[in-house]
Structure formats: C-alpha cells, structure tokens
Image 1 (cartoon, rainbow, N blue to C red):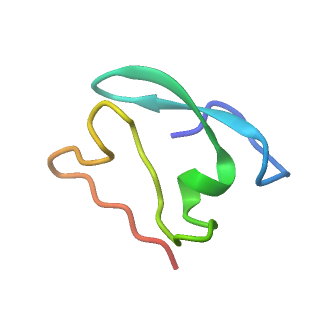
Image 2: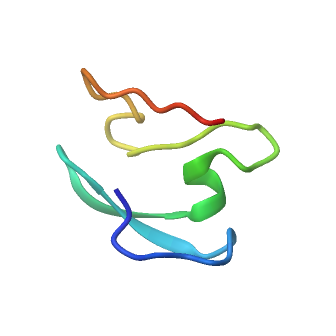
Length: 57
C-alpha cells in the first residue's frame, strides 16, 4: 500500500510491506507500467506473500 499519492510514474513512492516495513520504488515499477510489464513488490520477499495476489489490468 502506498504511503502517498503520486501523479508522475517516474516518482519514487514509499510502499509498506506487512513483513519487512517501508521501501522505496518508482511508481511505474510498482504498478507494472514498465518495459517488462512486471509489477514489482518488496525486494525482500520478492513481491510474494502468502495470500496476497497482484493483478494489473
């Protein structure tokens, strides 16, 4: 969940991982609006937490 709203996909946003706390990532990479079309999550848990699924439409 982001801590702030953003208007520029190149902005760094702070995300809160339930397991590992805050981390910063470009908004574009968190929502999957990048060349790879991959949404990135917490670098410590590789974006995978049991029971949590990310869907990008």
